[in-house]
Length: 94
Image (cartoon, rainbow, N blue to C red; front, side, top):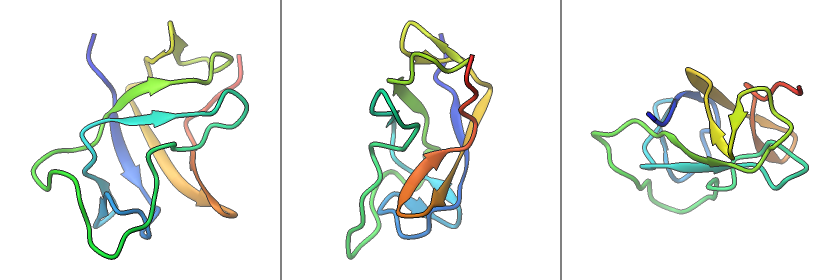
């Protein structure tokens, strides 16, 4: 099973975001009630692997249409800032 890519990340403040691309090797989505990027955090410098595109390593949103066994099966996801969180916009309730 391939981990889906973070196709777009619009959360510029994230330490892993460079030019709207996620460079964390893998992110975790959800806290069982909200489809947020649990990997999001701010830091004075950017991190991650600049040569890599972030992928979804785990998804705790069991009620998402794309979730199979806590693994995301979407072809790719979009993360954006909604209010004060970094949310997975690809989340779709079953």
